[in-house]
Amino acid sequence: MSDKLVQFHLPASFIGSRARLTPGELQYGYRNDWLSAEDVVRIATEYVVPETDSLKAVEALSLLLSDELDRVPELVEQLTADVESVWTYLAVAWVYEHPADFDDNPIQAVEMLYADFGCPAEMEPFVPFMPPPPGGKPGPEGLDERLRSYLTESWDRFKTARIQD
Image 1 (cartoon, helix red, strand yellow):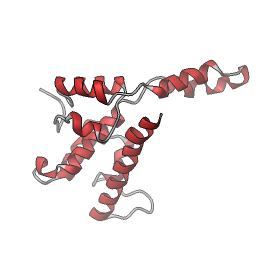
Image 2 (cartoon, helix red, strand yellow):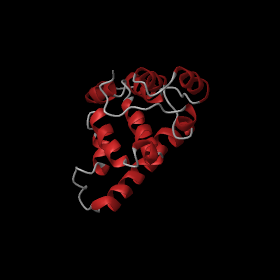
Image 3 (cartoon, rainbow, N blue to C red):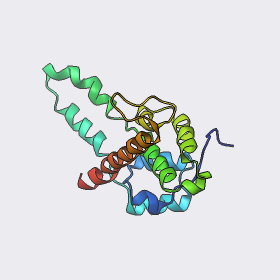
Image 4 (cartoon, rainbow, N blue to C red):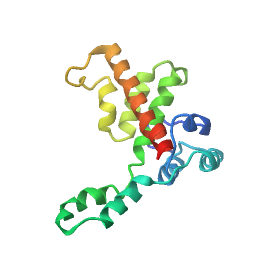
């Protein structure tokens, strides 16, 4: 049995319309039961991109001058990809777009995802029990605005930018 509060499979078509995955993200999705074996194969053939961030970090490390060694810790951190962020985004997008799958209570599902993903800072602006960010509109309308903004920014980050790379 899973330790997750909320768990569901995400179809390859849904993922492909919202993101391009790196090999590490694909592995994470399968190991954490977000994907079926069939969807892993489809994503691998249609929606996987190289892990360019890691390659850029390796290149930057190899070009450092002796007076730039203070950048080593920052660049070494970039060698390990953050594979959970894309799955946080995809799970939240699924909940937002399929509220009927969650007894028409997507807010509760978002709260459970927040716990399941270890309370990521990127979700705080639209988790109901968290305070709104400074200057942020309170209440359900503010939560919805921040959630839609997160989904748009994540789409740009995980699909648009990766297609252009």
